[in-house]
Picture 1 (cartoon, rainbow, N blue to C red):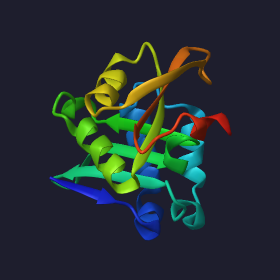
Picture 2: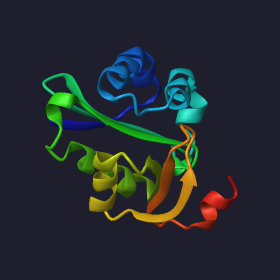
Picture 3: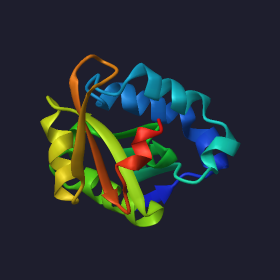
Picture 4: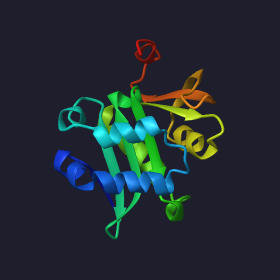
Length: 154
C-alpha cells in the first residue's frame, strides 16, 4: 500500500489512466468540469499552492484518487475503486491532503452520503449550502485552517 503525490512527470505519464479510473469508478458523480480540469492541468497549475493529486496504489493498481485545486475552492474530488470501498481509503487520502495542504475545501451533493460520511469522519465542517453545478443541493465543507471567507471571494 502506498500513497503517492503525483508530480508533473507522473501526471503526464498517467493522466489518461486517471481519467479512465474516474469514469469507471466515479459513479457519474464527478462533474465533466472536474474531468476537464484534470485533463488540461498544466505543470504550472499543478505546482500552485493548494493543488495536489494523491493516489492510493496497491499491487500497482490505483485504488483511490484525490485531486484538488486551490485547496478545493476551485476543484476537488475523491474517487475510490468500487472493489476497494469500505476500507477507509478515501478517509486516508483526505486526511493526507489536509495534513499536506493545511486546509481543504470540498463541495458534496447532499444525496452523496458516502462522500459526506468520509468528509465528516475526518472532521470537515459543513458551513454553507448552495445549489451545485448539477442543480442539486450541495454542502460546502472545510477542514484544517479553513475560513468561510475563503470561499466568499469565488
